[in-house]
Image 1 (spheres, one colour):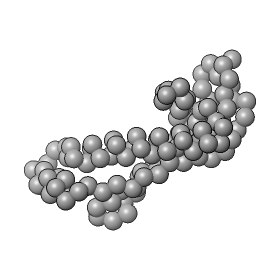
Image 2 (tube, one colour; image 1 turned 90 degrees about the horizontal axis):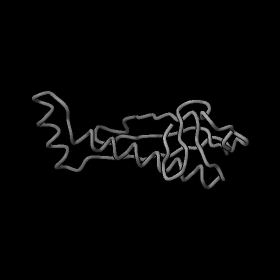
Image 3 (cartoon, helix red, strand yellow; image 1 turned 180 degrees about the vertical axis):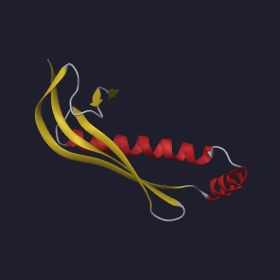
Image 4 (spheres, helix red, strand yellow; image 1 turned 120 degrees about the horizontal axis):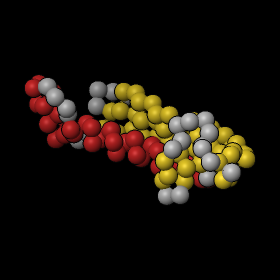
Length: 112
């Protein structure tokens, strides 16, 4: 479980110390990102020598955070104060674009 600005996000089906009093439904946040030309060239050169490609790690971290924020906004718009069963998914759209999806079940929780 983690808190994002007083909003509960959990990968589990329930939140310890809380009980779900209302299920609001499925929510998601989506982003599609591409490295700029400079980042692609730098990553391409780095990939020839092996090791971590920091340009893409940073891009994927930012993408995951953006997808998570959008999922939370979707849940808040439905009146939820938590999202449970949170998962991430990632797909290539082309050689230079990556889709990141965060999804889960929006719920209203109360402390037990």
